[in-house]
Length: 115
Image (cartoon, rainbow, N blue to C red; front, side, top):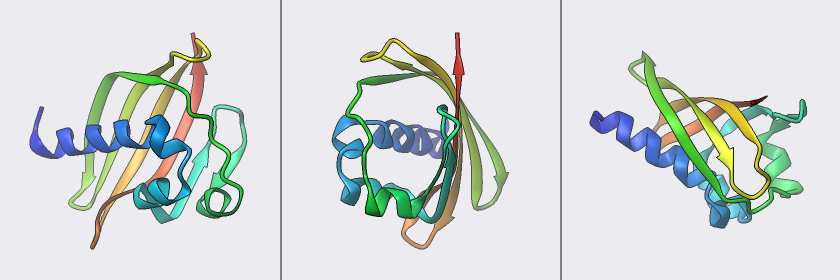
């Protein structure tokens, strides 16, 4: 795994970690100011939703099939599958990360339920 790909993989693992999911401060360190998400529930989430009404569950999750593609010098697309060990659900995930002055930030995320 290349250095940048390893860094993005570690960031993906960090934002699904239970300690980060229950902390709006820690999650705020990962999310871009312009962040938005198409959740596997069909709901659209924005950065402000996590600032005001933070309600992510601290589920244990595992990433598999991770792949990263560079979209340009300051943006990458990460795709992978997540298995939620708590609920037994599986979903396909995609994330767009943007390089900012403070490091890589999660700009866009999408989850799609799968079998």
